[in-house]
Image (cartoon, rainbow, N blue to C red; front, side, top):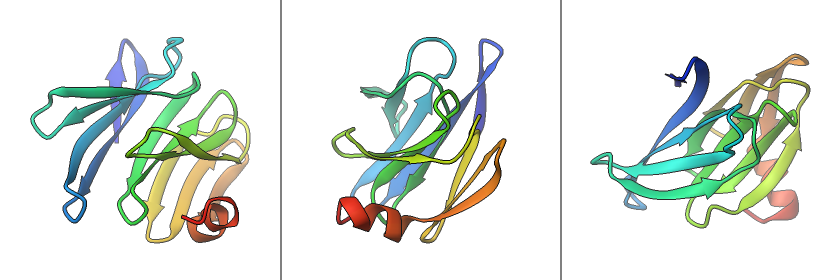
Length: 131
């Protein structure tokens, strides 16, 4: 989902995973020198800020792995972030000006100037983190 903030798009993801008791909203603010995801609970109350590199464009939530996935427009990378700790687990290079991310099952789908890219999350995360 995309929101508008000061004339620039920012990404938003709803994290809903009843088995983990997670119900939150994450909003990323790109191109403002901020580099963060703001977490709000189901009542829209501020919970915390997760620091990310500047340039985050879009964010998705993967409930199966309890991770946030952020497209970083500036670096051309996908960031895989542990939702519970806010730690960046993986940086996946996908091409210049990556804009959108979508998780469907075990597949991450993203769009950049390189085109549409599909990534098997099991392979990427298991190789270095055992997620």
